[in-house]
Length: 125
Image 1 (cartoon, one colour):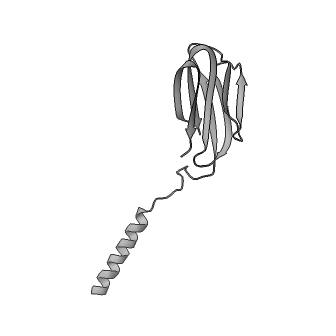
Image 2: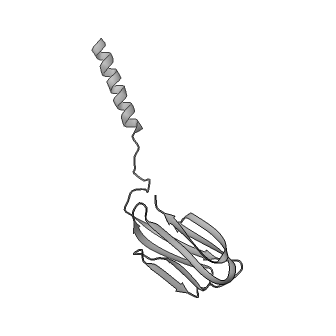
Image 3: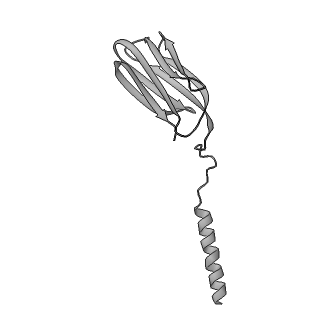
C-alpha cells in the first residue's frame, strides 16, 4: 500500500512538472526570425523633410533625401535577439514630426518630435 502511494505521488509530481513547462511554439520570440519592418514618418506641420534614415533589408543604413510626407517604407529582414533598428529625420526649421516603427504590422515604437532632427530605435527582445 505504501508503494502505491509513492507511485501515485511520483506520477502526480511528474504530471505537474510537465504541465508547467512553457512552450515556445507560436510565441514569435525565437531567433533568428524573419520579420516585416515598416518605417512611417508623418507630420501635421510640414509636407517634406531634408532627409529620413532607416535600416534596409541587410541592416545597412538608407538615407532618403527630400522625401515627401507621409513616408512609408517596408523591408523584410532576418533579425536576431537584441538586433536594433533605427529611424531618424532632419528638417529645417523645427517642425513636429511623428516617427513609427512597426514589426509585422504592429506598432512597436512611436515618437512625436518638435525639433530639427531626431531619431529613435527599437531592440528586438
